[in-house]
Length: 108
Image (cartoon, rainbow, N blue to C red; front, side):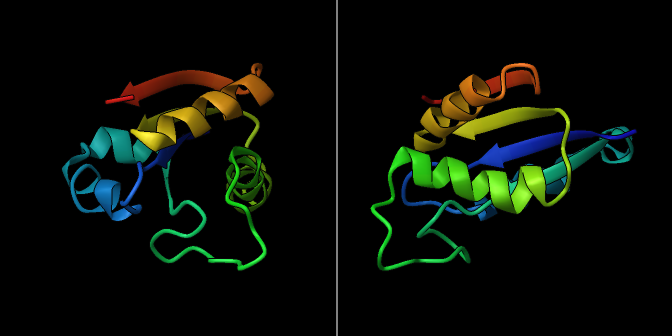
């Protein structure tokens, strides 16, 4: 079974940080053995921009839970995050300690 990797971007960015720079350079082996999810955080990129959201840490975590972890029934995952995404990755890891296989923080 392919392992899941969730990529979280930083402030004033979007999932294109990963999809336009990292994903095109992944090896065939990586593409065959991993499922890659590049998330647009709430209010960024193509994600919803709810007017009633306070965009708290909990709101971002809940959105990732609903749109990635639950939707794709992920039992375990790796987290890769940049800048502001690092705080969200740490919150996810603390909420899902037995599911988090690794965390990579870039420029936290």
